[in-house]
Image (spheres, helix red, strand yellow):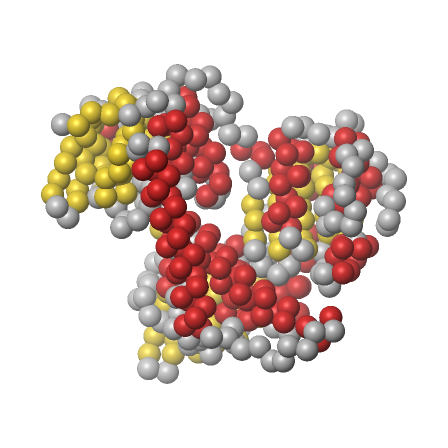
Amino acid sequence: MKKFDIAIIGAGPGGYVAAIRAAQLGLKTALIEKSPAPGGTCLHWGCIPTKALLHAATLLGRLAHAAEEGLAIGAASVDLPALMKRKDAVVRRLAGGVAGLLKKNGVAYFNGKGSLLGGGCVRVEAAAGTEDLAAERIVIATGSEPSSLPHVPFDGRAIVSSNEAIAFDAAPERLLVVGAGAVGLELGLVWSRFGSKVTVVELMPHVLPGGDEELSVELAKALAQQGIRILTETTLAAAAAGPGGVAVTLKPASGNPIEETFTRVLVAVGRRAFLQDAGLDKAGIVVEKGRIPVDPWGRTNVPGIFAIGDVTPGPQLAHRASAQGIAAVETAAGRTVAPVNAGAVPACTYTEPEAASVGLTEKEARNRGIDITVARFPFAASGKAMIERAQAGWVKLIADRAHGQVLGAHIIGPHATELIAEATLAVQMECTCEELARTVHAHPTLSEAIAEAAHAGLGAAIHF
């Protein structure tokens, strides 16, 4: 039996990052992955392919306004096979890069399904046979899979998950998206830009449920203006696929049921931790509400066994998994490290306009009894946003009134998913509005909007 200092099950953005860091720390590291290539859902089915599609969709939208910039380009059209080829090429190149990094760092890579046997042992079931490994420490990083609706199962053709929705061979004439989280909204925008008539239904009162309500309202309004039909407080009561499409019944919270037929239905109601046949019972791992409880460093109830990423409670985000992976293996290596700050993990939605948040929402802060200042700066007053013809949206800062500490930030507008990095650092470092306002920002940039919002938080807005 091969022996390792640490074995990591799952080579997604949590697992492969953890493996590289463990190897850097001098640990003899094994990484086990059941899929043909490392990278996990994020690289192969989620973050990367969807953003490749969104990039093309956004570019297509901007080309429609090229004449307003004085550029005579002509009508643009979608070559879907070429677009999919480009998307797949990006994925292959990045997957190859991950494999190269693992090799360079001396990580032992096992292609097969990993499961716990208890007693510090892991079984790898591969096409060529079964192999058992011994490891002093183990990290569970098996990720998640799309959740289906009990009464509307996936069929992979007419009723699909996000896995199939990134690879349609043609834009559906009519697409129903069930779930207005980031995945549903992003793919809804993609296929709307590529020619589909898109309807999005959401059980909750707002899109991006659980986020900043003002941002959600603004984003829903912007998407509706682009032709996407959004029905909140509405459920998918029934769906039946047939030769003429998918006949559905939508049930609003008030009013009569809506019966319509769609070409395809994308169910994007969330993801569930992938823990099937993981051997958790053999190792004595506790599972609560479908996930593995951990302490701030990723330690489970069993000494020497860690869990990170989507299998643990909290937002299922690739960057959170990576940060957890580093903290977990550094802890496993005996280092004293700070845990991942759960209050400073940004959430991003790559629609147009983009939306991004970090820290407390206005509602959360008030529910905690915190006396807050809410400061805003609109992109309508930004010179760079005007140049880019992207003046919709704003920066919103939530700050403690007594000390001015930035507790949260919410951005909707151009490049919000990039701008949120500065706000995340501000939340992480417990910066104040004054410190942000007195930090010199280059002009003209979109990032000036953060400094302007900070000035507003001090009651001294300059350009608005």
